[in-house]
Image (cartoon, rainbow, N blue to C red; front, side, top):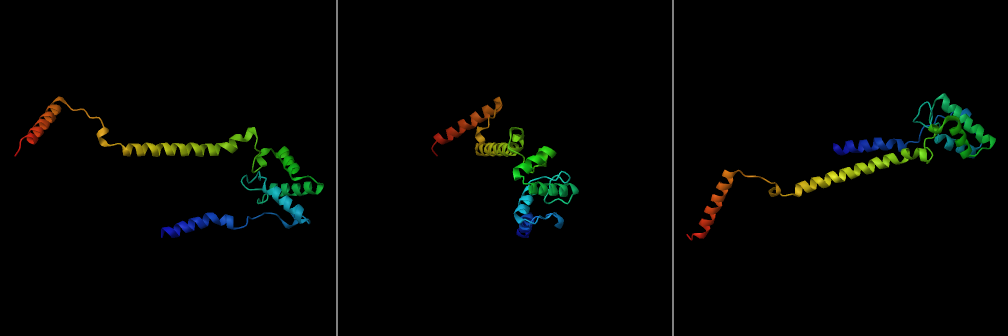
Length: 170
């Protein structure tokens, strides 16, 4: 039964990758030139819909996304390059419109924070595992115990009687 649940979970997680992403492009937006259309789709896939926030402009059904898709196609017809269109969008809407922000000093935190946290977490995990192994490997006789005076006398007398028994031949 467990294997069935694991297989179902893996299939559920892999399903979005197996299915082609849905696009919200309407027939009146499609360009006649397939090369320009492919460029427009690639640019739209790299831009964030500011209404939906975690969908690309290519996937979103919002009116904002439709306006941006039309604007991209207009800029392509004018003759702008892909980078020029992206820069135009950033100038107009800010860097938040980019699904993958630029790699620049003001975005280093976005790029390096997650790997940093993962490395720190792995180091903490390794230190804890190492401490646990060291505690388990330590023998119990390393634990310091103190005896009272009467306990020391009793122990000494037991040790003396044991030595005397060993010395006497039977």
